[in-house]
Image (cartoon, rainbow, N blue to C red; front, side, top):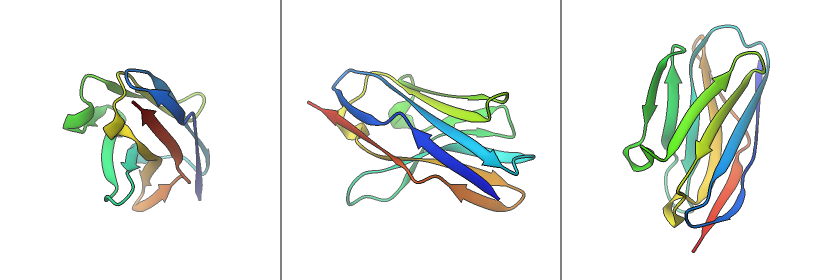
Length: 115
């Protein structure tokens, strides 16, 4: 079992920055993919950024050039640096991990961008 706990969300003004963290614990040994998703009210959950097989990074077109995903293996933590935030970035951000055919989700952290 793997546990994921997100932190770092909050309310920020347009153009501001936030850094989300996802602390991973439990039996983490062979991660196939880890990433961040978000879900705005009334919309489907969407992929924001992911790291595949430890090196391949993908971003949603809407966040390219503004967001950066990274990981710290020593701390078992995944990060999402978000810059130049816009109102459309508002939503609940979820950490996600795929390992050996199993998928794990965190509880989510709210990000609100106010204009």
